[in-house]
Length: 364
Image 1 (cartoon, one colour):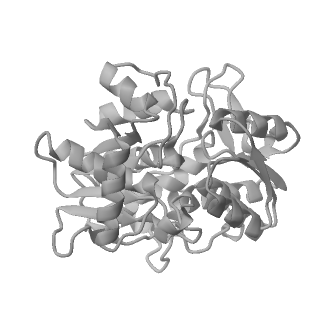
Image 2 (image 1 turned 180 degrees about the vertical axis):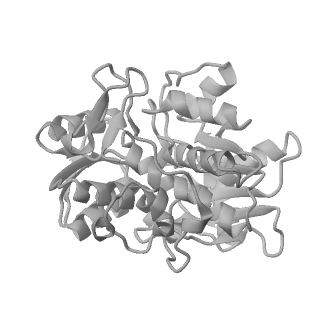
């Protein structure tokens, strides 16, 4: 598992050679990973590396870990199991991004990469900075200058080279891509290695629910690595005969930046252009998601949905989560807002799971 493959023209690219898209312009995918086998779960390992047999790192000594994954699954309201929350903010750097980054950095270490660059609205940059520091890989993080100072402080604390960029989120990406011509572009948006880490969330839910899968899962939707990871993980469980279906997957966006929600409702197969407004959910303020086509297909194939919620709905959901003991950033709170929006229309399959992606301590 040391190559990327273009799903369009089928060219192969060695992972170590710093390719983030195909010459034909397509995204890249990873070579097929081993079939999921419960007998190969390392049950003495309380991190996502309990699923090492399905992850693309060949040698155990190359794994760069801080115990990420195996996060709690709890009722949102005590003793009411029809609505569960997956506490991804319990990961070492305070967000789910540790899942993708542990696999990404481990594989880059295995391939001998010594220096990386990434663009991030905060959480991905913090995760990459932390794991790169642990792997002794030089790290340059390009961040929108307007985003949370708390996350920027966290990135800098790990010793990464923090590069604030004036302008839009797209301007930040373009600056990072230019810098990547002299370094390795460890992009959480482009890298299929990142999705491999996120797929372990599906395995965990399956284990935590005693070999069952949720009725429906709500996740924040920006670049969409969680949703793609969940889809891949649940599909692997289904294809191997360990789940009777793929749960309905619902991506939730802020109305101020909803290119995928607009596309889903319009029946389009790609993200639609939007005029980006202001939103407290800065982590999903992505106007042009790299894998938009794949995200729309995953939501439709799972009989899911894609919703857009208002700032008022987000603020109320954030408060209500906190009043039940879950202090999350606004990006996470969109899941509860989306759940309530869907519930107002009709019944929802049970149990429903909300993915709470980032700690409220990281906001501001």
